[in-house]
Amino acid sequence: MLIKTLKSAKRMIIIIFGFTILLLGIALLFLPGPGILIIILGLFMLSAEYIWAKRLLERVKSGFDKVKSKF
Image 1 (tube, rainbow, N blue to C red):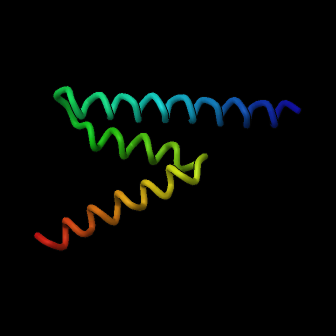
Image 2 (image 1 turned 90 degrees about the vertical axis):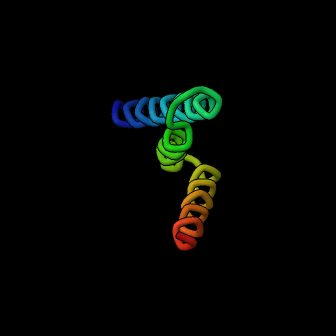
Image 3 (image 1 turned 60 degrees about the horizontal axis):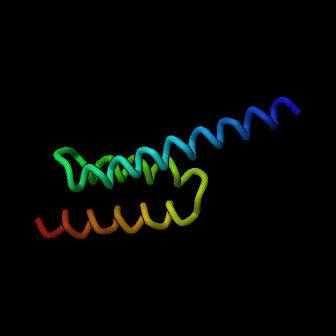
């Protein structure tokens, strides 16, 4: 029972921290700061729990690969 509670607590902390980082990254797109890097970090954290975040992170990675191959 305690292990299940600890796993749930860890999962909730990751989710809350991931969404906080993601929202901070979105705000940093309009403010001075590394917004895109912070968004990627937030998506990386959320991809451990959510499929949509994992898919979005893969799309971002493939977009960077396309840009990198052009240079």
